[in-house]
Image (cartoon, rainbow, N blue to C red):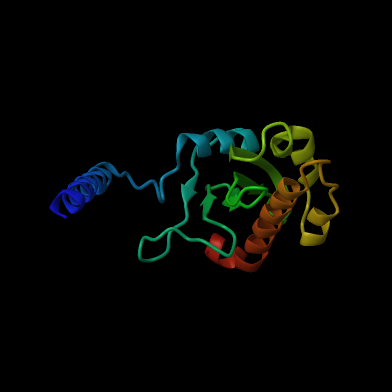
Amino acid sequence: MKEKILPPMVLMLICAICCGLLVFAYNLTYVDTTGVITDKMNTALTEIYGTSDGFEMLKDESGNVVSYEGVTSVLKDANGNVAFEITADGYNKGGIYLLVGMNTDGTVKGMSIMTIGETPGLGTKVQDKAFLDKFTGAASQAEAEAVDNITGASRSSNGIKAAVTAAVNAYNENKEAIFGE
């Protein structure tokens, strides 16, 4: 009986020790990028606004990053340029990570996809500039929904539409808080 129980118990102990070491190593080396403008964000801001200089992440009185429904964070510069960091669901949950830049009149200035985890050759077509440019000037969910989906990438297209809608709604509903008015 002992020879049947001892090997699985030793294996279980080894696994528990390895798991504990992995958790310890993760906690020791983890770097929280919440509230930090990453290189990907700088590149995306430059693509939308021509520069990433002067952008800061909006934070509340407690120093927490400001977020709204569907929006992870808000970036703003002294000129009134605003961009929303959004992670949208396409075919894959959380498969589209992008910035949506807004004009001061509440319309979409442009978008930049920072990371895409959609199906190569199909869902990844939503990152084409020609498709993203169709959302420039959109000021409502209806205008975002009016853009035709890419054939074979309906879920990814709908993810982009949802991101645009989230950005437009966040801008219109929180304009005073964003600009401190």
